[in-house]
Image 1 (tube, one colour):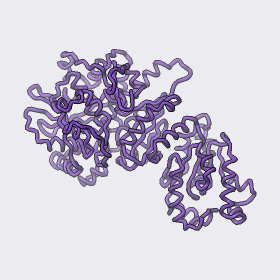
Image 2 (cartoon, one colour; image 1 turned 45 degrees about the vertical axis):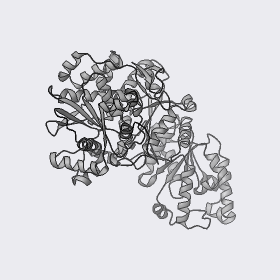
Image 3 (tube, helix red, strand yellow; image 1 turned 45 degrees about the horizontal axis):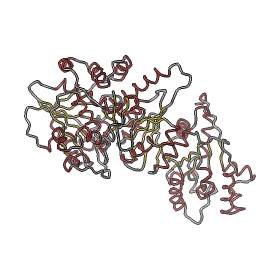
Image 4 (cartoon, helix red, strand yellow; image 1 turned 90 degrees about the vertical axis):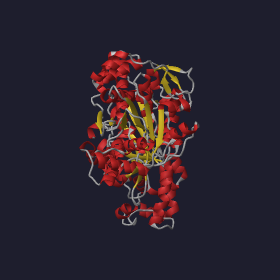
Length: 610
């Protein structure tokens, strides 16, 4: 299959190339150059086909690929099938969430991961040196877990997930942050649009691209997107009655799910029309109604996977309809609903039909009801995108029931691996550079946060070399910090600490534990910031207890109370670090494992000690 750019259709590329070169440009996306209709015989046989069989037929036709590798990929990918739940003769929920992470994103994520793994294995199986690709993905809730699960343990890949801090459900965060191994998740103090913008800018960065092979796994990547057409065929084959038409109601955030439906329609699936359902983030609705596109600041809602103010896939939709809203309106009806309407719909569906739907599916049903369509003889299929148990807290609150499933609840027994980034693209870019060049780890934080204990535990468990600045000073002067503070005063001790830092040479150690006041030394921090600086954030009350209100540490107070000092330093630690770990809920052993797994090169780790 040939692909062209939405921005410049003279830019043409093969499907496999489009996967590895995820973006043609910052403003463009790849789309199929041509989509030919499937032959009539396919549709005649469709009702009798298994899901796997129809996947093979559709993907082989779409990709123009009848290879054994593609068939093998589909056999290995789809050990799960969509399900249909009807609540009446004309209203049907297409449950697309029965994959490993309980979201429709599994259909595209697992195909992409398996296809790439098979392609790379075929190419490099006899090579001694194998490439490593960094899968970069932003998520508003579900994509991250689907990609992490799909690429987990695959030999050619590392996965970096970006998600908006405190703006996804607790269960979604648990899924993203409990994989470990070759998956690392960064929470950014921003929204999804910013996370996605980070990904796009990294993908086209000329300097980073020279040293790191990035692949996007968002629906901006065409391999992630195309398989999302498959469940439309399955729903049609199981729901369609010959005397009736069929319409799909699709929750739309980044609009990849809708594009999947449009591709199915272009392949010949006789879909009468689509309803694109949006929450308060309604960029598509505004475009359809006004003919003008404008991105909005993201609004946080309970249907958080749809909290997208600047949907990427609108570029593909505009391309399909020649950027003519009048043409689009013939195929797509758009309606947005409020958070209150979403909540009311969850309750109404449960009360009337004893059926639980998640907030995104509720947006779809609420939009359909709000349109008050007068069409007759139509089956409406609502694309149910996520298992309601992923939003258990909200479901329990609205329905007053305990709603969960064991596969998700067991995640609560696994410690999270959450790394927090400040909202600064250049800082993220620098962190990727440092990580790629195997820089040492610098631990900063308040006295009592566990810097020294953690450095020693990393050495004990993995035989990683370390330097403790306080130990270095006390050994060099033959005095304790208290004695040094008494003899030289606060300014003198600060200078001693600064000098100790500046004597550290590159490759002296892989872990450096600093004194708590290091952030007051500009030369010292400039020196240390060549390495990866991790702030071990710990609650004030925990620190007070550990340090007997800071009296058992050689702390430089500069005339401040302990609380004032803490508040001041938190801001400085966050400003001067590459990332933050909230240590409040981690054991020291788990912190050691997190840091070694994701930031210490394998060649320096004694795995026999793990």
